[in-house]
Image 1 (cartoon, rainbow, N blue to C red):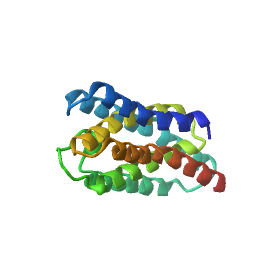
Image 2: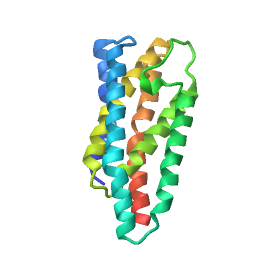
Image 3: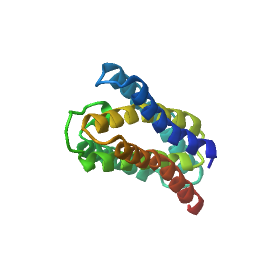
Length: 183
């Protein structure tokens, strides 16, 4: 696993926080468009690179490829569950509240861990996937930090929670590296 991968994953969240400090965005259409673009880019990387690589490696290694579809469907189910608990904040949907629902933070952290796991493996599409995740994390961090600030949270606490979110994708990549070395 590359150290630059870990740094880029962490720095993308920090870039989102800096963007919020400098520009103080309100809920904006531009952020939602960037989130949509980055999500579509990640989906394209998965469909055009990762899934074909999974099937070709399973066939060349004489493994049974029929279970891959079940895991893909399980991934979609997990994504739907995480979006249910995050209330769509990763898509720019949030409402000003005085209380931070921790289900939002927990689901975003789980999402970040899961999207970091493939980066720990030896996939040929790692660079494209890394760029997609970095592009996706910046606007998610902007939305999350804006949500924290608009909810009345002290900046110190907001930065602690954002730091927690920032280390999740690198932890996922590290876990993916451990999984690939075991298997």
